[in-house]
Length: 124
Image (cartoon, rainbow, N blue to C red; front, side, top):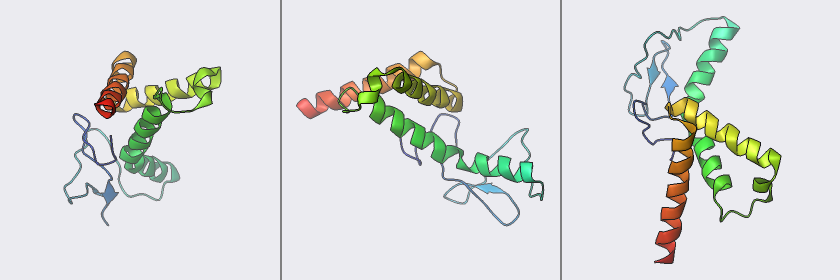
């Protein structure tokens, strides 16, 4: 999934803010938020939260790419069989789960199926 892909209920990124602090998508549409205040402020915590929020779609895309690449059996990553490697894969999977409101098994199965489909297509 790319940074511009659509997660159900999620406005594709990257996002930006205009001079009034309104969150906009790549087409200039306002990203709708409920119960979240991202007002322009001199408060360091508010600015840090706002910056993290804007990075959300990009961070999700990076997690998805890393999980797909490192989790693929065809990838020659020796860390996959180590405890540290498994912890990393689980952390990536769990971040994807949190961002997409999916359970771990669903995410794991989805990426495994994508890899199998791609591998079978390459063999045809």
